[in-house]
Amino acid sequence: MTPAVEEKPHVKNVPPVLEEPQVQQVLARVKKVRDEENGITWYYNKNISHYVFKNSLEAYVGESDAGDVWLRLRIYYNGEKMLEIDNYEVYADDQIYTISVLTGNIERGKGVKGAWEWFDMQATEKEIAMISRLMNAERAVIRYIGKNGVFERAVGELEKLRLEYMLQLYRILTREQTLLTSNTGRK
Image 1 (cartoon, helix red, strand yellow):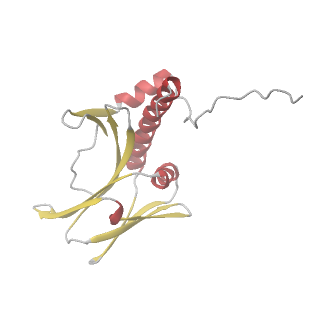
Image 2 (cartoon, rainbow, N blue to C red):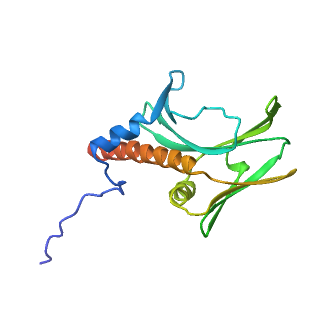
Image 3 (spheres, one colour):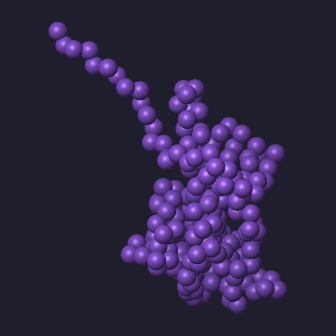
């Protein structure tokens, strides 16, 4: 007779738990924008505009009424000339991450503040790992590579902090969704 094997319930990989005061701190740093038409709540850092005329790397989070949660990245360029950006290279110490504009949407234009290019994409595990690495990197650089030139700059400490806040929020919301899904059996 074979001994009975106790089956253990499938446990999903759940991000680390933040204590309630930490969750409240994260929520206090973001602004919510509701899109009723599409049933989505967007979360942005409070201190950054949705459209900026400066060079920055930003993240934001979307949550659908159905409970789906996703992290998005925005890379902004503003300068004297249009670069016609094809891809970006992000350096986090000894790691190099390449992001092609083919993986998202890019808008370009010219205005009183010069040429601008705004890139927006849904983050995959690769970009989430990049953000995690970038947040603590001593050497954090982004290179904008285009048909009309290359622009390189350091990723500032405030940028890293804003990325960290959005990654924390993303993990909080995905953890909540994972717990709801595992408790209700939904997929």
